[in-house]
Image 1 (cartoon, rainbow, N blue to C red):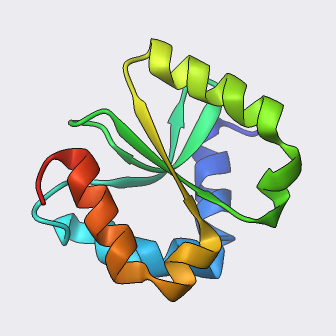
Image 2: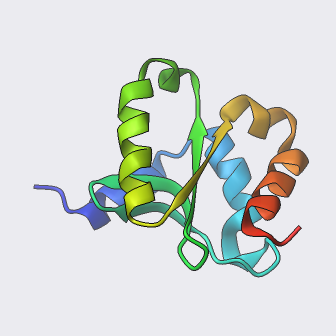
Length: 112
């Protein structure tokens, strides 16, 4: 049986290009000192990125999310019950407007 820690490592190793691009902006407190975790387990789910201190989860959505609306909604309800806000960002937005994505995240954190 794979542990959550092992699964998180696997997800980080197999990150998508948009995940890698955004992680380069978020890692090591590069975004105004906010600490983010990547592929962080929260309950039965793994958040693409999470700022635990500010209870913000960032989920990157690609084409595969077009057909997972029900599952995504259930995940968001679970996270909301645990006090998290979820910010969904399209992979294409990361690829084409990374600066805008970073500003959106800062706004969500109240630090713009």
